[in-house]
Image 1 (cartoon, rainbow, N blue to C red):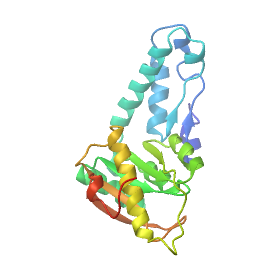
Image 2: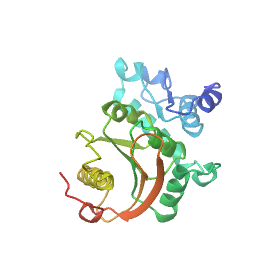
Image 3: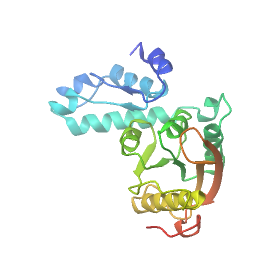
Image 4: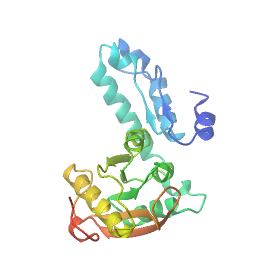
Amino acid sequence: MALCTPFVERKRDANDMGTEMLESMIKNPRPTRAEISDVGNAVTDGADCVMLSGETAKGAYPELAVREMSDACLRAEASIPYISLYEEMSVSMAAVRASLDLGAGAIVVLSTSGNSARLLSKYRPVCPIIMITRNAHTSRCGHLNRGVYPFYFPEEKPDFDKVNWQEDVDRRIKWGVSRAIELDVLSRGETIVIMQGWRGGMGNTNTMRIVKADPEHLGIGEVP
């Protein structure tokens, strides 16, 4: 794992670490101290996800291996000084900082390419990142970024010459928040930070709103 840090620094989009991280657990019910250290270092160095292979595919203790890795990741994340990670000014940084200051239940972001969600993930918020997208590929790839919960909005993009763009934005946000509450990712009444763009398309995210997680009063229109 000595190469973990420079690798993560070079490629910040979606970083995963795997291959023999808990190799000894193929035959033993407990990992070695060095293996747990490797998992913890991967998390603190910025990896978005870690992976098991032989430990669960052919190992004698697959469930224990998953539990040990999960516990190591949670303990490592608890040691990260989240506030000190902010070094550049951006809407993503401001949204994450607001979520920390307010104790927000989630950050909600509308994204076409997934880049806004990746930027949020980069700043390591404590709360979940709820990404709402019309792009199925973006939704699938969103699972690779730490803390991102992708929600695929199944409706086609409307003709904005006939449909008010902000109404469509609010409708998607209300839909995503409703689904997140149904899946217990978010609790009704919690504070949420919403990121959106000033117009449709990629690269236009520049607006932040702070509201309560109440789908009936977030914006305009009915939840489908």
